[in-house]
Length: 259
Image 1 (tube, rainbow, N blue to C red):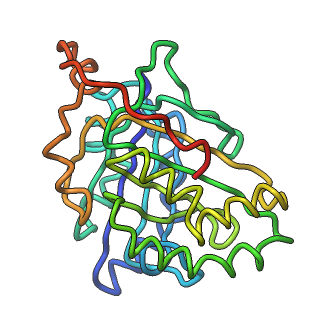
Image 2 (cartoon, rainbow, N blue to C red):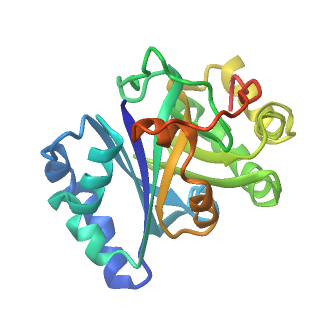
Image 3 (spheres, rainbow, N blue to C red):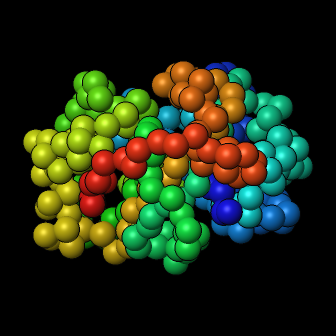
């Protein structure tokens, strides 16, 4: 079973932040040599919830794809390529995920979905990534402050953060929801995000996009908005990955087709 990890690293002091910023280039050769790591993206964040043209030099993220849950846990815990992050970060959390559906590609990569992938379960984990056409940058980013404010006020989300590889050109949204209806309402019907999505597809703002859904397997570490999810980490998908019989749970409601 392919497992995707989403790790967050927090840095509080100027020296630690300078180190983290330098790793955006320096860490990649080592990450490419990491055993069993088939795909990764090391990313920065924006101010606030991450949706901003102003960078946040205190928070960085790593998305990675591994062949199994056990291997993913072991590499996050002990891989030499991540030793500096484990040593330098003031806080760190990793979300372990099982891909259940995907549409589009990320830098040419398509996430591996098992033929027998289960239906998505609560909490709903969603990730969207878009490459914005340079000619559309001004129109896209004019809408972002209002979307960021809406994210901050949105009571239905469990967690949401904006991140990306290259400032302004790439935007990634990673979010967790306790209700498919609330996620769909925000994604499609909100006056800010919903309208931006409609305009993006109507006016062809994106040169590439990837829209992926996951089951939550487990959460390691502590991060505001994620720590409480650790209590529900032993999901049916995690139990299945560990060859334990999963507890029966109803299928999640239909997912939004666009974030």
